[in-house]
Image (cartoon, rainbow, N blue to C red; front, side):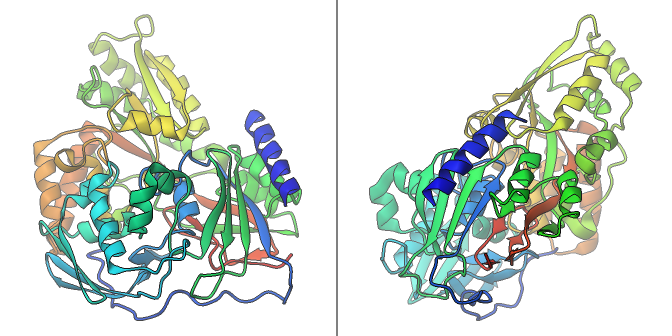
Length: 516
């Protein structure tokens, strides 16, 4: 296997150079997932090698919160309650759950779980896991809304500080269960380099940005996965990820494009995973930085954003039409005031503010994943008097800049958090989510009032009316604009089955089966 790892590292390096309403389902009482369908009996360990587009410099699913990092750590950690591929709630560390009132939830904890360091799960661990959310920058937005976390026997009670239907789904999404003693004694290494959870896989090797190796462990108290070892390397280019699978060097290439899918469909030894995504790629401004605090400047730039052409790249991607993004289901509406692609109108607005091709507006856009859409946008902006400087950075660097607003523009990614449309509102909430979910640093008093009401209302007619009004406000001020849904397309050998990919692009192998 060491030879394979070396080969994968060389391959990765070479390739990188080349190119609903309130979510309250009935609480099930099922135990953790049953064993996957068994492959033919064999004494040899079952191993696969896979590639994602990127591996972050740390393995904390809260701070390094991109889908690839979370895809890795979902094998190591459990949550109180899990979300399945349809965003339905399923048992995690909690066997059952119920909402007591607008402020209170109860969770029955399964204390049969064991951490990968051999320590049994305790209620103290679960309480600590929830309380620590208030101490981490990426999760303190929800952590500070928790008034108390208490235990009575194996029943955990969480009380929130306000009636807000988004709190618990967001908390369940962020709150992986950790071992209190291990985290407190291990410092950053225990969180970023050597994570310990109650999941079926442990991390046996990690080189930041380069490789992660996951292996099953003997003390896991439930049915073990069929695949014993998963080696994960980064290959940034989708075509090169595909080639590695086609050539047999890898068994899985995560999140490729339609071009790779077309190639895979002609190969009898390959299969394709297709799914619906709630994960969008948006472009946004730093609305607190001049001149992007000027709505006319923002509208001019968006008039130069050719959504149709950008979404046609890489074999076709679906356009996002709602300013509130895709999680809104029946509340999803078009924004009538949204500036459509019109270079003449873009030029007119910019000239009124003193910018022309001879005196261009200089704008730097930050992004962390290569996308031909950025260069396409850059070309159109050049025609109207905007000199767009693109700054492609490693994801950890991206994180250090996006939160404090160290950018003019941002080409980023926005997953739906917690499987509820309520979390999509966070992107426009200045008072509670500035620099966390509200990356555009946009503030509008009426929008703030609408968002507060939508989080507490269960009246569908009222929610619809509020959604329409909020879409109109954001559609005119365009602080951040959804461009396309990130498609769910992955290619794998047909000897691999049972891979699960959630709408938020998290990829899972707990129930996968590989027959070499």
